[in-house]
Image (cartoon, rainbow, N blue to C red; front, side, top):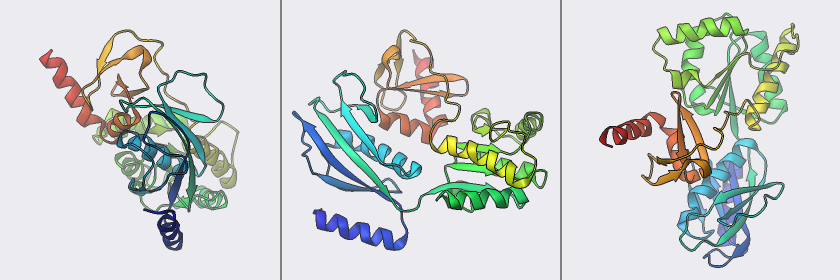
Length: 301
């Protein structure tokens, strides 16, 4: 696909209001098949049009581009095995190609992105939707269509709304509720058959304790929590301190040195270690599938 073709496709996507990201190779150090100036488009569904080098870097590029679309912010990505000092503002990933070259890419997102679903018909819910639009967030009607859900029901259908959000595809569910109410709702969700992995999505209260009273104040505090999640600063899971030993990656079957794993993901109280973004993203899309593979491998050992 030529640059002209990519620009034409971008114009079509803009006209349809579809989010996408333009990926440009800005640096390539041999041995690598990538070339400076090579470009590709990543669409919101994870498809890639164009060419930016070897296929072993494709998963990293798509994952970084989707994250840029979700956050609405450009990013500079380096894919390498050289253990250099981290550069401020450069997102580093492991190069899985046997050639061990280095590729740097600039990713620029375009278009409105679906970032948030607000559930509820309360005044606070309406205020939250207003704030989301002012922030440039595209609101989704279904909890299955956004990575983050804010439950602002405040006593009006709390349980069905929360259950729908937790069973949906969102990675984070925030709820306007006190800690005491949130704990009671967690028990109600367990009684409804919601699993612990799904309950782990819940963040309540939705934002910091600011003494909010009026609906506009409550919504503002909740949107602070939403913004923190969208900017990936919300309560990150603690990474285990230098664990020792090997762990078999349940996605690709490769043995991973736990002390130097690229990613660590917690699921159902257990840590899983990953060697690359592709395996990590695959696990997060269907954690129970790969957890079952892991358990089966332990049973065979």
